[in-house]
Length: 591
Image (cartoon, rainbow, N blue to C red):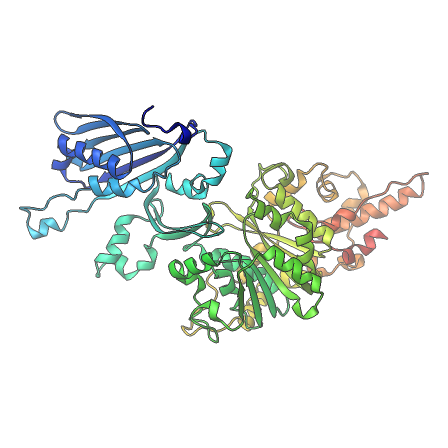
């Protein structure tokens, strides 16, 4: 009690932090020295500003040592295998004081290199330096407020407690006025290993040194603990976000980017020779500065002919550090046609993130209307929709993706004439990632459904050339785009789990016992539906036959049944139906 000031006593909650550190290639004599290990343990507690109340070490036979120390904050313990050069430690503390910095202290005090005294120079070459594997985990049951505020309880924590991540090195950690920015270098032993990385740096005649890019750690950006993008998946994610929507527009000249502080989205937009102006609105200038310093390839335009070494200096780029929601609401109220955009790209938080700013981005009717009003008449809006659903998922409305459902419904209500959802499995998030384009005019569906040759031709026409002679796009091409043109079956399943189920789902799945349907061969042209938008003639013919049958039967009853085809204006769930059937396609059906 004497050690605690009652006036400043912290609330004690059943929660804490656990740091596990395993080190190999450690000197055997050190690992069998009880006094040496005891002193290192005392020093760890002191350097970590922890209070060691007591400790006990015990030498084992034939070799090895076990130690345990009781801390005011909880405990520290270790065990050694001298013959294997291995030591394992765990440090657990209660309270909110960050424990991660203690990892460096542990590695310094216990990672003693193997001695080479008396060895020949040839034998000494085979002595490996100490290597540590460590994991960090939040434990217990903290308050909801603490859980939400601690970035280590989010994506970054999953990486730090992953035993397969052999190499975890903090590159940068910055607190801005808006958020915490973390950059880490990571090596996952399932796909790479630390030894090969070190070989690529130290042995000039090795295969690894000749192909160093294949052995680099993955560099990952986290904002408030939420993973944003990775070095390995940079092109796959950002090219997928930008180019399908850009090519859905015939001639994009003015583009706006919401967020995108890494500047990789800006980089991709600037590859289009048609683009004359790009306005990037990022609330936190700190993200841009940290990214330029520690993620330089994200904003590198040096290979693009006609651009600048840094994409941020391209004369077409206008970067503003302000609230995008407020900016668009103010801009749309002006009503100036000269301020309209051909394409708007939202590269901000995932709709699944339960934070106020994400709710504002996806569930604010005033902001959504301002985006619609800020688009030209043939404008295209692009969103990233977060984790794509899997077959067992409930409807978005009944899950953490409810914000996404609200967004899709608002797009329909605002009057977008065509919508296309597509999925990419290589975006670097551990799960397939979903994206959306919404078009103010249905014409964009013609570009969206172009064949592979047409897409490749348009890529060649539009893309700026490079000084190196390499292709400006590393991931996106005609073949990839063909895979985006229809939504996945998992999306179909999720949308059809809505209650009540959309009419589209009922029509496409219900077995209608009407003989005429089996023989219906109505050509698409008679439905006044553009042939390029029809991918399932059988379905369209069946619907037409059903309409004819209903009309025929309706003339024989007092109150003829009414079919509701209004849902066809909504995002259609089925893979074989164009995602975004619009009013002009349904004139025949409505009649």
